[in-house]
Image (cartoon, rainbow, N blue to C red; front, side, top):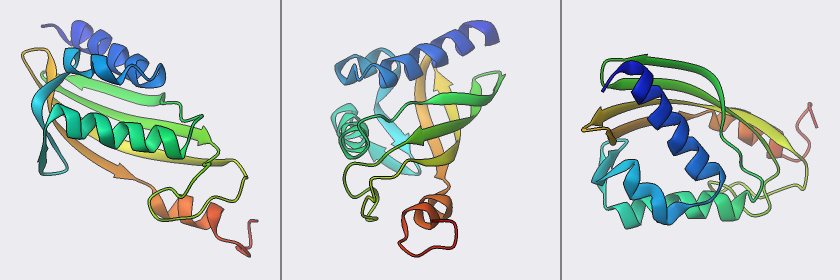
Length: 135
């Protein structure tokens, strides 16, 4: 698979997430998949993503930076959204927030085998904390 093919596959994966086609994830992700050093079945991975979408109904994965090298993909994803329920333990305020995720993927046979994800939780916490100077 060429790097261009891999980029197309990755963009297809994000489209699948943005369209909430969670049953189709097995087309893009191995079963099991390793996510932040935790081995998850495809069902557990789908549940994780469904939970995020339920907590933030307007969650949209927008590529800000994308690098493909060999069987690896690195992406900075921007989210501009409004949590409707507690997100990662932080209650919603009804106000929109912006944050980024830095994520690295290792592909095997054209599907994601490993994911390392870091979400800017400090930015989320600051925006959702009542009385924060920026609020």
